[in-house]
Amino acid sequence: MVNKEIVTFVKIYDSIEELAIEDRELVNSAIEAVDRAYAPYSNFQVGASVMLKNGKVLTGTNQENAAYPSGLCAERVALFYANSEYPKVAVETIAITVKNKNGFIEYPVAPCGSCRQVLLESEIRFNQNIRIILVGTKSIQIIENSKQLLPLHFQKNDLNK
Image 1 (cartoon, rainbow, N blue to C red):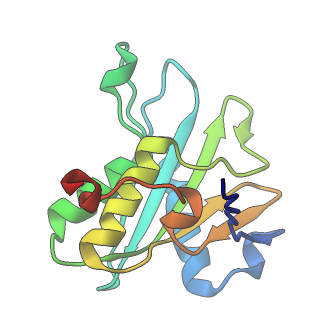
Image 2 (cartoon, helix red, strand yellow):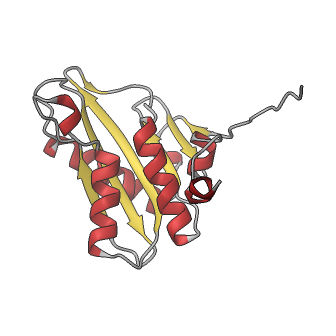
């Protein structure tokens, strides 16, 4: 038997003012997007904003459905929109924020497993890491790539095993 240690590195900031200007702008774009979410069932509105390598910023929001599996998370909406509109341009950074019935959440929430897998696929597709900015009013976390969120990941090579 062998024990393997898996370590995830997260940079934690107390406020948006500590971020670089381009990160602040991306976070503000996600904050603006969150009110366009369609979340009548969970009241858990998520806004995601992606910065593409060409400088374009695109947003996505969660879209719920009474048949829960039919909805889609904000992260995937933003990533799929980016890949649809700019199929040859890599995503550099994604900012994610959440609002519930009490307002914006205090501490960040990480993407679900499906969104983590889509982030990973985008990184592999373009051979470029995607920085992930998770936003709360009392804490902001920056993760340098999706492998930090999904260290034991499934990828294309696994299909050929």
